[in-house]
Image (cartoon, rainbow, N blue to C red; front, top):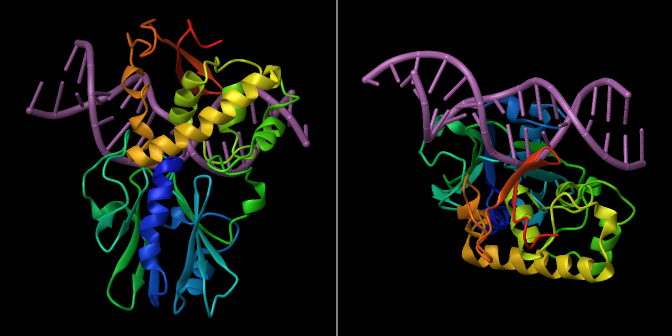
Length: 263
DNA sequence: ATTGTGGCCTGCCCGC
DNA sequence: TGCGGGCAGGCCACAA
């Protein structure tokens, strides 16, 4: 599924869409328009403009707009099955849990450029969305660049499960279910640990593994390429010590973890 | 304010 | 071979 590494790949792909005059944009499904503004206003802001910058904040891809929509921003979300395509090229090859079929009926949002090219969000399940001027202030620090002090503030004084807190986009932006399992496994921390119970040493360890893991997965090319991924199945074993992994629900999400070394 | 829960959405896999 | 139930989880509305 698209987590931070995939969105980063989409961002890099979208850089190829900058400074290209937009003819018009089309919504393949009205439900894909999110936020308070009307779909009409969203499409009107794009016509005749161009993208000036491609940014990423957690799992939100933001394309800044130039004249005549200077100061406005297009936000793209990809849910768990959304892909980004530019001129027919995909941002990532493989997306776990998502179909890899090439079905244009799943094109929920298309930006047509005057040069004939297209930027497309293809999302079978409609869990993603497009929004004009998304409120970025509700997002926590980006997980890739978060400082140790910021992570400590995101975790402290809470009895909520550590994993739930880590996945709360208002606290830390960019960590999804697969990466949360991978990071906690690497940091030897149990997902159900109370967020505020971490010692300073554990906080530092988690911070180090969070950034290292994201960096690693970006370079490997996907959130599904973690060392734990293949074992997130019944009977799966810890790649570190061979212990059978436990499956439990933490923060409403399926979690796989090692009862031996994750404490 | 904080926290937990259920619903949305639909392709895919498994068992019958 | 076809069919139906269950599963996947990011995000949001809603309740307590």
